[in-house]
Image 1 (spheres, one colour):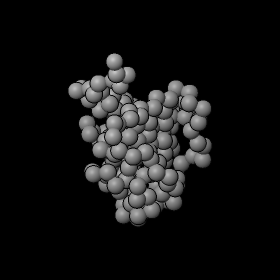
Image 2 (spheres, rainbow, N blue to C red):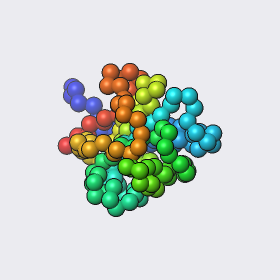
Image 3 (cartoon, rainbow, N blue to C red):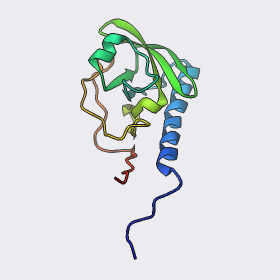
Image 4 (cartoon, rainbow, N blue to C red):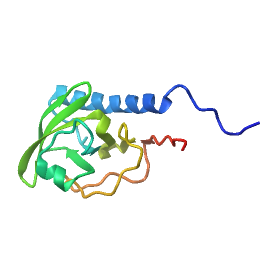
Length: 160
């Protein structure tokens, strides 16, 4: 009797990642509807900058050719959430920029105020995240907790 589980004909990993991205969309949609972040909540959102559909200024794409983390806290504007993407205005070294990010490009979402984090791979991305410089958009200097509290990590290994 084989100990290797059979290959699933149901794409569970894709279904779960799509559901997690819906959480990010719903949270950002609530912020858009309410006109701001409640209480001490703030978000770190990491995404693949080269993913199809990502729109951002060329100087940011050149500086972050693979992955970037943005902070939504005090200095953001024009947050618009659609079914497949969100748009937001941010300031990078006092220079305003407009970003459009498909949810499929998002690899991480953290709300350090409540130790909540979601991590997943960008759709169509087989490798893990590569090291990158911090975004340096004009946000806080606090970093998310690394203790694993309330963290959901989705890493479905693929058979080779």
